Image (cartoon, rainbow, N blue to C red):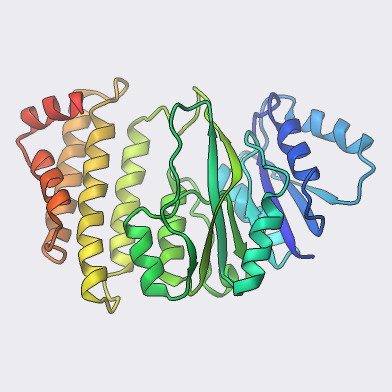
Length: 321
C-alpha cells in the first residue's frame, strides 16, 4: 500500500459524499481511505454507510469509530495509527481533490525520496488565491526551515503527502484539544524534514464555509495561538542556526505578533477586558523573544512599530487595517 488518505468525519452530511467521490475518482489507485467517525450529531455516517453498501470499486475503505467526540487532531492521529500506506495524506471531509492530485504528489515524492510533497490550493468561494512561493526540491533542513518562516509554503496539514516513516521517527502527532493545530504541526515538520518537494499544480480544493472554525474566532483561538507560539520558539531555543535562519526567525516573530493583533481587534465576540489581557500576554511573549531575535528586516520593523504602540492607539490602527 502506497498512500493512506485519512478523512475525519464530523457533522459534514452536506459535503462528505462529494469528498469521498473525489478520492475514489483519483487516477492513482494504490491507496486506502480511512474514515474516522468523530461522533458527530448529523447523518454523515448514515450517508457514508449507505454509500459503502453500494460501492463495488477496487479501493479499500475502512471506518474507525471514536467512543466519543475527540476533535480533529485526535481523529487525524487515530487515522495515522491504523494506516498501512508508506505515505499519509490528510483530507478534510468538506473539501475535495482534483482527479490527479495524489498521482502528481506521489510521483514527485518518489522521484526525490522526499519526506513531504505538497501542491497548491484551489480556494473555492474566495475572490483571491494564494500561490505557494516555494518551488521544486528543497533538499536540506536549513532551506526548508527558512522557506517556512518566510511563509513560502503552506501551514495547513492537508494537501501534504507525508512519508509515514518520517512522522513515526519524529513522533509527529497532532496535539489534541488545540485550535490552530496545523501551525504547531507544520512548524515541527519544518524543523525536522530533510527533503520537501513543492509542485505548482493545484492538488486540493479548499472550500470556504461561513461557519468554519478558522473564520470565526473566540477567546480560545487566541489562547491556543499564544500557546503554539511559545511552544514553537521553545522548540528552536537550542537549534544551531545560521545568520539567515536567525534573521528569518526574527521576522517570523514580528509576523506572528502582527497577525495576532490584526485578528484580535477584528473580533466582536471577545470583550474589551479579554482583548487587553490577550494584548498583554502577546506583548510579553514578543519582548521575551525579541531579546534573542532582534535583527529584523525593514519591512517587518515597520509592522512592529504598529503593534508596539500604546493599547488605545494600537486598537484604532488594527481596527482599520
